[in-house]
Image (tube, rainbow over all chains, first blue to last red):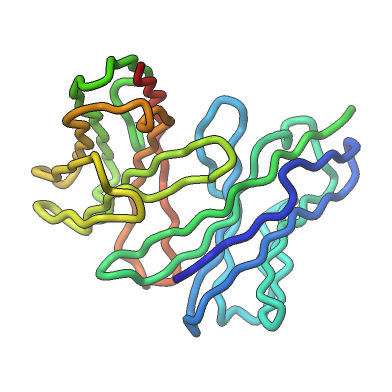
Length: 116
Length: 115
């Protein structure tokens, strides 16, 4: 079974600074995918970034980058130049093949607050 | 495109009542999912569907039933609501791409309270 662990229930960062949100995972699969989603206070889930287990380079999407360390089974999200609008809950998730579906297993989330 | 929509947005039920949550997507996605989100626990998969007419159980299926009669719709039913089913329910859909990349598109959620 897959498991995602996010050990930081809450994080604070000063506006314009960088912040790293931790995510570790546990799987026996050789191939898997890792995702980060953002959930603002309005409640919707917003896809941010994806990393495949065989991707050699870390994924980047604008101010978001994924620090993927396969041997340590970690997939940390790095947000550069934080903005007030980045204040939200952030979820790490892993894709797995279960039955015939492509299921996502989510972590418990990290609440990020950006301070002005 | 409306993406993924959910009806209703809010609902209050009494214990023992039944209700159906509707999810609709206009992206022609094969896969659809129902999750529940409880405080401090992230999202947990209730049921999912890999195509019209097919459904399967997820991590927490007890007390729920689903149906996918049309490709664009995925219904979640509560036959006899219990206070433990108070939660925020999210529907999601995805393409049937290579299995590693499975970006799921989420609906806005339904906040359900069972008294």
